[in-house]
Image 1: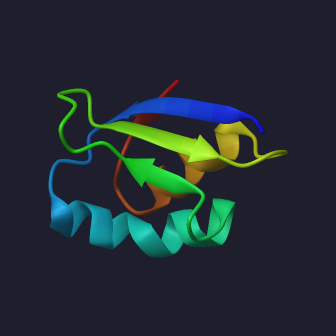
Image 2 (image 1 turned 135 degrees about the horizontal axis):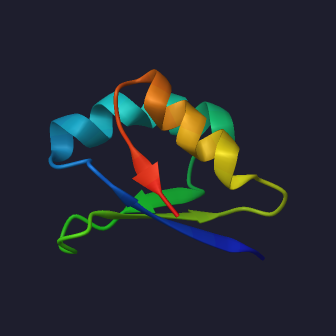
Length: 68
């Protein structure tokens, strides 16, 4: 299974709640996680055949950024 990691500007639980519908739609529920303990707020995607651009676009549409 492929794993993608992104540095994000997701800062709190409210931010996670805001991105949840977009990420669930893009990569599926249970296929992503934001590490809130990491200062980089790393978003990890664990799903085959998802493109980094799709994840970045999904986050941008709800007002957040992600860098691979």
